[in-house]
Image (cartoon, rainbow, N blue to C red):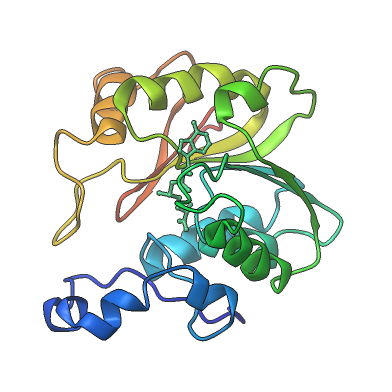
Length: 220
Ligand SMILES: C[S@@+](CC[C@H](N)C(=O)[O-])C[C@H]1O[C@@H](n2cnc3c(N)ncnc32)[C@H](O)[C@@H]1O
């Protein structure tokens, strides 16, 4: 992995996270100007798993980009002639004219890998409306409400190729991890895949920290 990224630490470093300087530096403006590395909302093990699945994927869609840490890993790992589609409305900026989160994401993704990148600045439910491209690898990490995770699944899984993979973030409890049983992705995965191990040909193929990977592939 070439790019410097601040990963989620497990167990969390309480001393570091309560310091006022640390909290100030969380603002994305500092990533945009290059004073700190992009902040990931995932662990190093999750990042490595995402990169592993990206390696053979020519068309990747990420729903929920934030500072671009996971997107940078996907672009770095995927084939250079592939395309990375990044879906995020970047709607949470307090000063939309500056939108430092979006600027930080563009900087992070732009400095990782060389695959084509298509930025889709809209909500996933709007982006899918006229979607035409078969997807090899889909990462669902946008709106975390249970009904929104289910909507992303129902909207996007039909355009994933037969041997493609869908990853859900924040979807699994793990030792010292942050998800709780009431997290939307955790509840959705429990309902759709753990209680129905063969959800129309789809089943869980891998789990890494809070990430759950599903596919129609047969496990060998
Ligand atoms: C948890 S963060 C993504 C973290 C990122 N994948 C990473 O690991 O570095 C969630 C992001 O989803 C975006 N988001 C929220 N609702 C969305 C939706 N319906 N469609 C696409 N993106 C959405 C938010 O703007 C936010 O940037």
